[in-house]
Image (tube, rainbow, N blue to C red):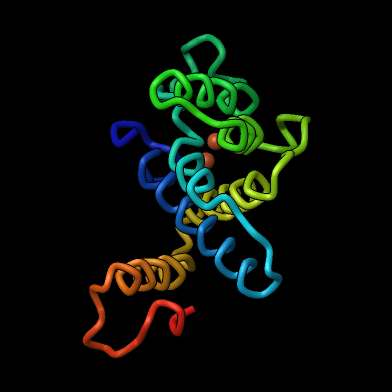
Length: 161
Ligand SMILES: [Fe+2]
Ligand SMILES: [Fe+2]
């Protein structure tokens, strides 16, 4: 995934990490504000693997690459299931992440979050708009807090939300 470009100068790997972080950030806020519950393990695993199609989709000389947008969710889901094993939520997240191109709508709320995060990240990466830096910074900050790496600042992970 690090060897293939996704949008702009962003690799597929970097894109998937960003989508995972945005999805997790949205889930944290929705859990806190609306008391919704999310399967965050499945959310992060599937977000990291949602574009696990493993080819250069920019090479249009390869048959089928001209319809990459429609076909890669299923390819990524099958690859990820083969290499890592997926649960039903993870399969839905990956195979529906291009909705509405995939026609069938997301079945789980986790799938909706990844679909939204994917489109937001794709826009930022394509137009080289760096509006995501602050949000990514906040997610990294919370992860560091949760890992106890910022205890010197006297703030708990819960307070940082
Ligand atoms: Fe995708
Ligand atoms: Fe994506």
